[in-house]
Length: 140
Image (cartoon, rainbow, N blue to C red; front, top):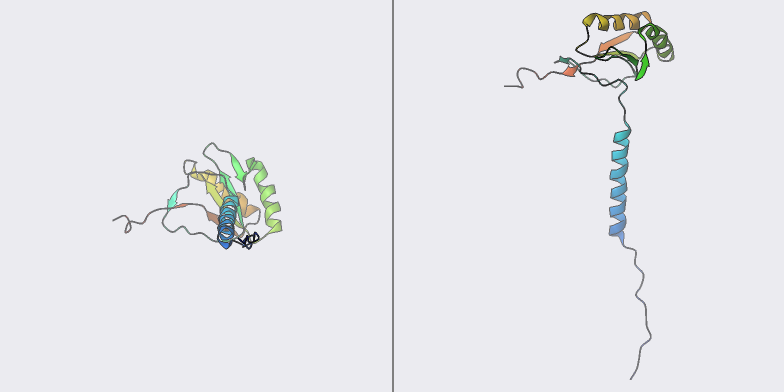
């Protein structure tokens, strides 16, 4: 009787588990990058407008919360500091769009005061943040 010598199986590289791992990493990094995007303004209840749009521009967000706190890009400031902070930000980027992010429960004249401070600081472009209101035709 003849006994053959033990021959181990040839090593193979399995591709399927490697592809699964690569897809898992791809999904992980996509989700992580989406979570890293931040809004510059503080969260407030925005009024609705049917003509609101989004523009991918450099923005300086002026926020007035429902409680009356002022912010410039999530940095709390007092009203008397707005001019100096805006002047510095606009010196770095004079074409920046200043966004008035005023809570809908605030008095309208406070929003106008924010716009005045922005114009006085040298803002060329000014806009008011709103939420999109469903149009009458789409609600039927």
